[in-house]
Image (cartoon, rainbow, N blue to C red):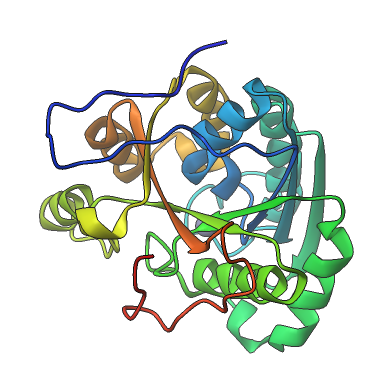
Length: 248
Ligand SMILES: [Zn+2]
């Protein structure tokens, strides 16, 4: 088993290891979010013996990529199943909400589905509140998970991008990545991207011509950054409004 502790030369930064968890439930919007975004972190949890499960709200049929092949909803469902096997994901629940329209679904409806899938999770894993790419579906999936975490007293951990990475991507590629300042990052882990790359390859409809993804992974190197939306020390906390989070 690889250590996830890293040692940073910057003396003012604190690094931690991956939080302990026996059953991790990832809540995402689209097939490929579990790989392109959470892939390295999910693989690390699986390596550490956690049972890993995913709830995915849409089939990702609205993607601008991969529209020339077979029906995208079917293709992406199959890609998700293959990627899940690669990452060591034990269970996938793929729902059929309209891609791009999660914000129109009542939050209570989404939270009820996450709550149904929750047991026996002791950790929820999501995209950061800004949605990473800024996609509203990403933000909605996180919102649903946070509501369930708050109601059921389960900590919620978010995968985040450092603001240097987001800023560089946006400057180079005109993207809308939402990053986090160093003092908003709670955990930085050293990761191995091999299985993430293999999982990404399973999503051929989305990864074959995807320079933004390639550049993001290149800039991120062998580290991932995480932040607590609901901290395990106080899981009854409701997540604060975006931008008003305070550190404990
Ligand atoms: Zn997505």
